[in-house]
Image 1: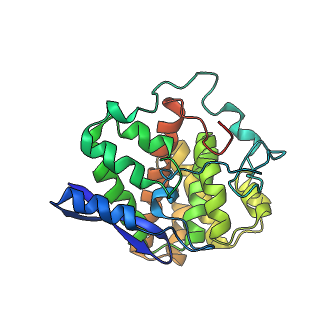
Image 2: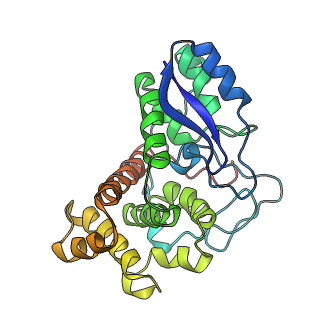
Length: 264
């Protein structure tokens, strides 16, 4: 069974956790879904690093080595220099004829019209039985989340920086702008926590991401600050958001998936 799609005006085209047995009808609905309005929050497909972002005519290389479809610079911190090391693509993006029929039909519909699916989702499609459930989980994490978009993207960027994942960083630098972060703030996320003009809650979020990365735990001091600003559902979500983007960063790095924000 394939996940349904909704056209959420706040977040664009998103798969839901609900399923139907008429797979062809699901595919038709996916195909009819409209792209989000200009300025709308990115779709969960793209927010979770599986909606393609390809350059268009006029896109230009930035001083940081990043690209966006609009030509705006993607700030890629120096920490990304170790991302993926020197190894080449290890798991190639499959051709449509290599995929199971239902997956070959679903995969293109995870991308915005006129674009290709993100390489992370194309690689995941090689394990056919995981793609649909993953789309449902990723949708639930975003659509049913209680964290603000800003908090979500702060965590995603910090995780990408800690993991040295240029793929995830490029994805979420763009989404962070949509959540209201400035270019200066995005660049600062990769630096020392004390170096930014963050609120107490935001500093605690960044520290939590660091501590989970280094020790798979959160110190009592950091947890105390977090619990003063967030309720139990938000605290649970913080842990899962860090875990989600850690997993996706590991996949992108280990599978040798290059950032898909630059020219082919």
